[in-house]
Image 1 (spheres, rainbow, N blue to C red):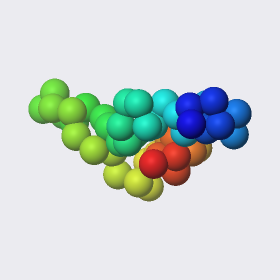
Image 2 (cartoon, rainbow, N blue to C red; image 1 turned 180 degrees about the vertical axis):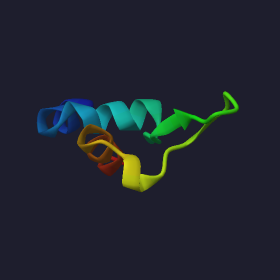
Image 3 (tube, rainbow, N blue to C red; image 1 turned 135 degrees about the vertical axis):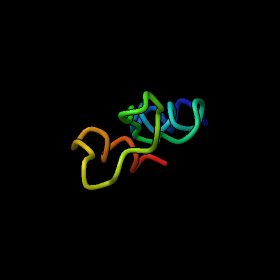
Length: 51
């Protein structure tokens, strides 16, 4: 199964192994929080779509 999935797109397999990608940022209090979707980069949006 791994070979089949990675032949399609390796990032899909990384999502299966590592869990979903959630874009985060550090707020002014130094706490890591989910990043608002409006601030996602195109790379973050792409990685989130693999879930």
